[in-house]
Image 1 (tube, rainbow, N blue to C red):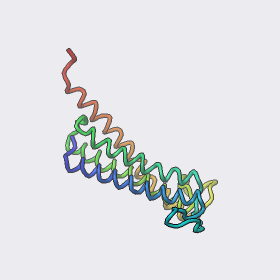
Image 2: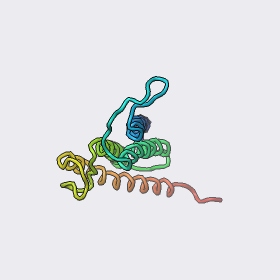
Image 3: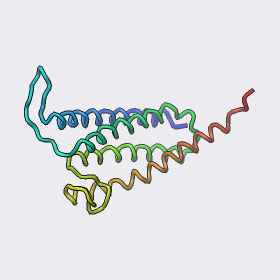
Image 4: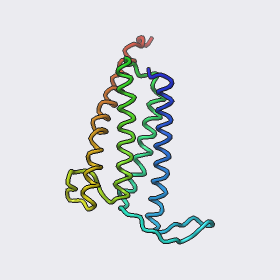
Length: 166
């Protein structure tokens, strides 16, 4: 089982991701309106925010999804049985994929890139920014497989310690 300190850090990082999602959501909202409009504070202040609807939707939802995954992992940690090294790998791989799937999605929305292919592929946007985002995509791709694999393995190990039902 993960230590209480690591579980708390997962929750705090989950909350941080939810906050990043809320901030991306505000940018998404203003992108859709094409203006800053928060009646009665201010209305129709023209603003141009780059990107497209799909990119902003993804930027907003990545933070929600990954934040909730970290919070859920912290909540169910008592049902995950791993040794000390496995716990360390699960903790750090989870933080890696959660943040490095979310932040590049926000960057893609801001810069109008996709980060799906080195060199940009068929997508518009600055190639250098695209390539940087693309390279930041590799650690979380590896980390998510490590993290989910350890999560499943740890849950199975816990299950095997339970007695047979009466």
